[in-house]
Image (cartoon, rainbow, N blue to C red; front, side, top):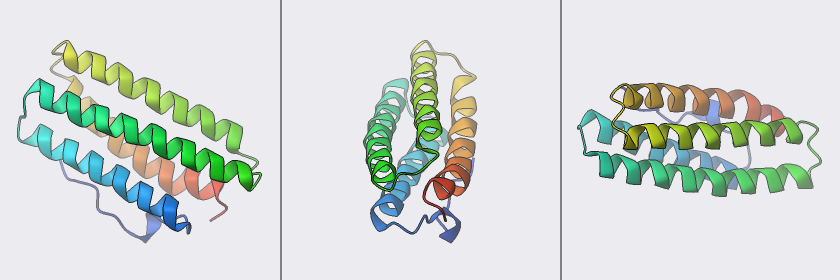
Length: 128
C-alpha cells in the first residue's frame, strides 16, 4: 500500500495544526511500512498506540484552537474525532485477536479518514 504524501491540499494555514497533521501522516506512513514489512503483532500494536496517542493530543489542540475562534462546526468536529478514536481502538482490539483482515482494513480506513478529514472537515473548521 502506498504511503500518504504531504501536499498543500493538507494545509489549513495554521502552522501548528499543519505540523501536527504532518506528524499524523508520518505516523500513518510508519504503520503502512510496518504492515508492508509484515512486522509482528506487538510492533503493530505499538505503532497503532502511538498514532492513537498523538491523534488525541492533536484533536485536543485542534478543538482548543477552534473553540478560541468560535468555529460553528466545532461540536460536529468533536464527534468526528471521537468516532475516529473509537474506531482505532476497535481495530487495535481486532489486531490483538489476530484478525487477519484487520491490517488492510485499518490502513484503508486510516488513509481515507485522514485525507478526507484534513482536506474537508479541518479546512471547513478553519475556514480555508
